[in-house]
Length: 402
Image 1 (cartoon, rainbow, N blue to C red):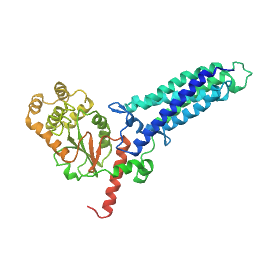
Image 2: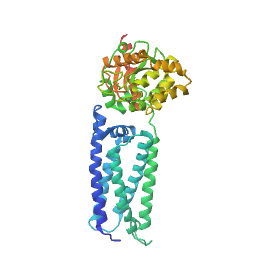
Image 3: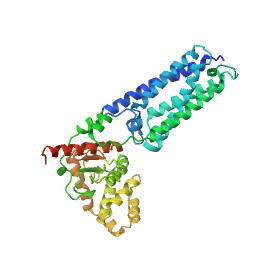
Image 4: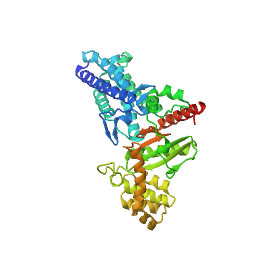
């Protein structure tokens, strides 16, 4: 059945726009993967952060960047639209185009769910690609009605085949993308496997500066895990910091699941009322929250209160701090006296002074066996870091190091 070339020409233009957008996304993805210090133009902080999404394990499929797959899909779609744009009858090219566009919609839907429900970050480049795919789908799907309705027509030109291919493409894409998303690769067990999976991470991580643990701890900090653990993570953190709140569950699970890890918590509120290195309070409730955690610690409940603060990091005003204290069964009169005591602020200030001496200027900053990591890591990267530290420690011991 013949068709006006207008719709095909629009589909071709949309596909070419998708090629350009995907090429830009591939470039950003490669920069993120190869340069740990790179911050993309679409990293706006908070929940709008392309770097988090593209740098996650969902940014690749079978070792290929998802943006690269999108680039190839749009390029193929542009080629398939050319015959129709030149006035050709509905046929095999249109049939494949319908399946391709429908599969793109299904795949984009799964990735959108992952961004919202798993990563909890939005990638503007990804969202723009989703818009292009939606426009592409709206443009192309009416072509199915232009196929021949006669049952005696060649199978590739039948209307029933067109609708079947469109539906099958979407269903298979949703199923395949979901399976790929939930399928977890087996954990790496040694440095050789880590190097094979992510050589850029190994190069970046092993190039980070290392501080002696004696400069980071004094024996009076809040700790979890065995004191003689092979790996010590010193965390400088801020209870009002969103990135610290995101790092909190991963660090908690890490310590609970590993007997060879010790976590040391130190305060570094980004609040000028107790951190003189800041010209203004970025997080105006952070110092008070740190003091409240110290007061809970005086009653033996530091870690429980620590967890409550991170779980409610957007509500750290004074009234809320007392509510968390009551929920944990703390003595409120003692808690209030401690919170108003200048020596409590001085205790927080001691951690801040240490942080300033060792170069902390953002939160969270982690020192993994003294190796300085500015910012939180993806969950898998903590495991990679621990493997690197463990094998490095064993190699050092084998050489007779102390």
